[in-house]
Length: 466
Image (cartoon, helix red, strand yellow):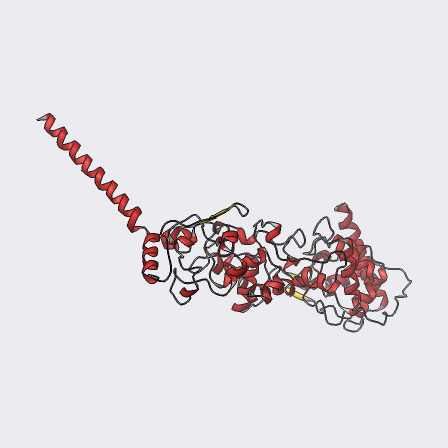
């Protein structure tokens, strides 16, 4: 009885094993997704195009990739399949004439997982499949981001990637480097954007994003409403349209950590850093906060008054040395950081070009000289400051949403006449009114206020060790 029991048990185990083997053979030989696609392709092209079934792959050691995409995308190189449905359709346009798959593969342009042989794993775009690879395949329009791996944004924008070209221009026009570094140049208020297009999905917080939770959708919606997607974000809202946000997101995706051999490179985005254009330097690195620079504005998110750095009257009174020091040293206690090569990456040539551009807008007529020579009373100045200046410049001149801080080194190094002329004449186009006209300050009262501000600067800056 025992021998018979073990014989039956062995027979059952053998049958189960055979069933598993048979199932595995059937799964591998017939039911796999790619085999089904290849059978369908063979029927579609029967008698027209020779086709050899089996796994297809491109081995690309120069790109550190292995791509098996053509295992399913069978009609990629067949021009007769132009009207066929995916995955059998031919590649659109004549792109493959210049980007041979055996040299470029597929994922260098389309992203996705080149080693995968089923759509869920290869595309990684369907969260319902619980596949979250770091490089989900790009949607059709976002594929343009890949062009920048080998081409400059401007060239690509004119040769088949218009959204990439538009996004690159928006990046400069909006002054994104005012807060974000790329290539070691830019501000530090936001994260550096180098490699932004290579960040894994887990890098992007999806808690406040409506489904579908894709990185492409995250980038677009974050650009349109930063505080909704990342509560507490200090990023400025630019009121971007959907099309502009998509174009800018595509450019951000183009900032990838993708080493491409020199022989595959057509052109690169470059800046002429030896002979910089001051206007371009300003637009790229300053306009994100200062805008056109002709009027001061309140940044409600940062809670600060952004000064009008191209105000003609201010420039005429301040001079180029004040501008250069403000740019090189920044303004402590304000969002204005140092833009020297050691901090934000601007070279001396770029700073000089920027100063020249700013100063070119200075008023041709110099302000009326300040000639007061009497004694001053800081205590009287304190009372006047508390009554007329504090509401904008904050307690003890530390700055606020309506006026900048007065306790900065560059301002402390300016002569008394600069401060006095500013109080006396105001700054047309800004929130700084003429206190001689609006508040009827006498020259004595103006001098007293300046004396009090000097005491504040000496006290605070000496405590800080400046």
